[in-house]
Image (cartoon, rainbow, N blue to C red; front, side, top):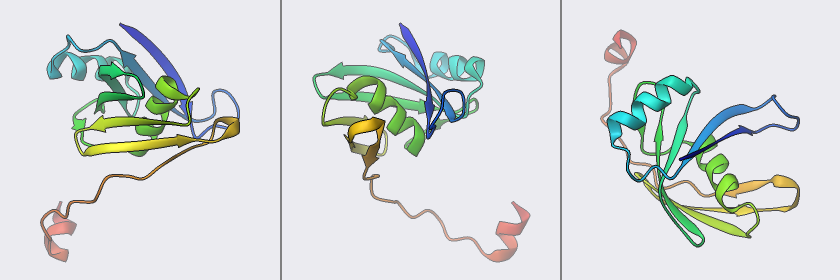
Length: 128
């Protein structure tokens, strides 16, 4: 496996939202990915489980759980895998996200559609 540490949303080194991108993670199960994410102790760690020309299947973990989608890991992972292209597609648990790149390291994405969860009352929300 190969691990790249990236500063996402940074204009200078060591000033952004850190991200670990682990390539070659096809052989890892969810519990191993979770353990690595906990060890990294970043807000998120992404795992590239299948990589092809212009696209990859990726799983995103926090130190405590897997996420179907998160913005900075999506942009950072796409930058690691495809920054020398015009665009790169990431297949996440929430769906396919296309990331496009501009000169100077700027990346843009259209997030997957939002799924509404249960509606909570004010009292129940305050209690949680």
